[in-house]
Image 1 (cartoon, rainbow, N blue to C red):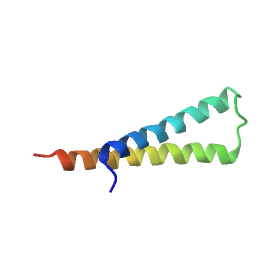
Image 2: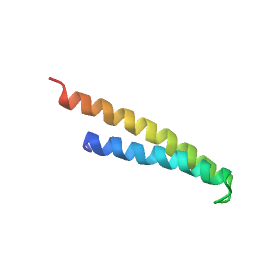
Image 3: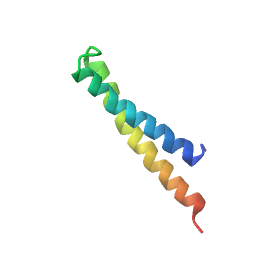
Image 4: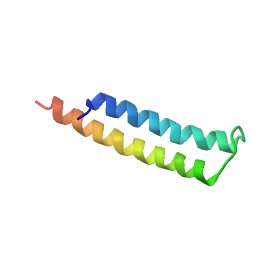
Length: 64
């Protein structure tokens, strides 16, 4: 299993991508498409879940 800090960082990166892509689509920096919108949503949701799983694993490892 991956180290909990890595899971939290990966979740943060995915959430950041899921936040940055819609901003760029609204500003018309990149062309908004259905596929890109779905990819942005999937990155945001998977980042949230990875962050929660990483936080739970971190707590489980460092519990005393």
